[in-house]
Amino acid sequence: MELKAEQLKKQFGNRIVFQGLSFETSSPVPLAITGANGSGKSTLLKVLAGLERATSGIVRYSEKGKDIPIDQLRLTLGFVAPYLNLYGNLSGYENILFSIQAKNLNIQNSAVDELFEYFQLRLAKHQLLKTYSSGMIQRVRFIQALIANPQVLFLDEPTTTLDTAGKSLFWNYVLSAQQLRLLIIASNDEDDLKHCKHRICMESFKK
Image (cartoon, rainbow, N blue to C red; front, side, top):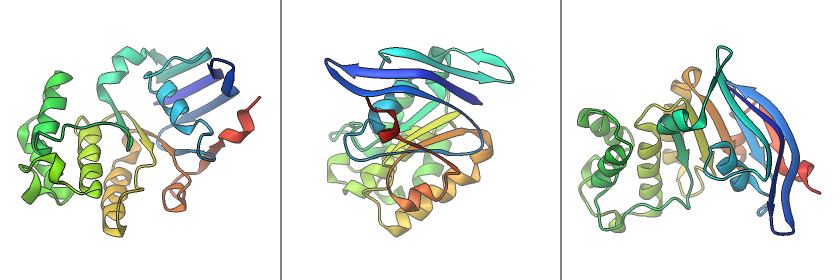
């Protein structure tokens, strides 16, 4: 999977978040996006994932030289971020089943069970999400993003609420299948960044 961004610009009113941003990346080499708080890391991830439109510029995905429309890719695109809301009055398990049904994915319950087991949530999977700790909720977000075995995985500050054991579980799982997907990480945490060979610094693309 290849991703090419050409002369991306994002502007809110008179505020330019970034401009002149061009890069190419491909699986299986993870790409890191770094920068100070408010520098536009999350905004860039959303633009690349097709969740927001760029003010100008082009985002293009391709595989073996053939372009892949973002609408086609979206169903198997994973996105993890602390600001993505889940439903507190549903159980962790029900949150995942709802996400699967909303995307009309054909995924067996046994695959969901395996991820809850791996992320050490088996005993809590039928408890209401509002009873979970922040680290447990983040693990549910991982399951939601990974259940469809995404071709592209976006991670926005993925491990900020996790303890050391949680970080190890997450990275061991993600890196075990890294040959199969494109991985883009927005973070300033060196424990996350150490997995990335290439980095984009958002401060380099200001006005």
